[in-house]
Image (cartoon, rainbow, N blue to C red; front, side, top):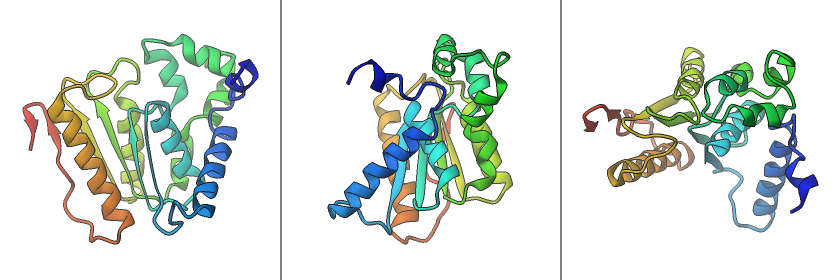
Length: 198
């Protein structure tokens, strides 16, 4: 796509990318490929970040699942195994320009979320610290927004054990279907524990 396209979200992880994704959603609806009354959003890593960002910006999605996404980019710069990514993406370290980090961090807009949103994260993730999902989960829980959290034992930035991959997919599908297809919310789906899944 070229350098200009690749660098278009420098210092702006949250606004122009959000608009771009919403334009795509609108196009899918116009084409009859999506039902505007049953939309859900989910993503992993930067996609998990965007999922958390999207639910702070709009209520058009009935459910969301964010996987291993950073929500506090200043913390991400200090805990990730690739801290230089945040320096490059924001053109500054957090202490050089704290405002750009605040503007781009969904945790500071958690008070606007109305969408039932679940989070999933590997306990051994060194790319995005598991505390990122925990922070957003606790913020939504404190506000009474339907939320859930699955922590994957032994997993890094994504599940690589077949049982965890399957459990993560089933858990995600159950959450999305529960809130988009009109099902009655039930007890939380499968929970990860240090001894496996129960």
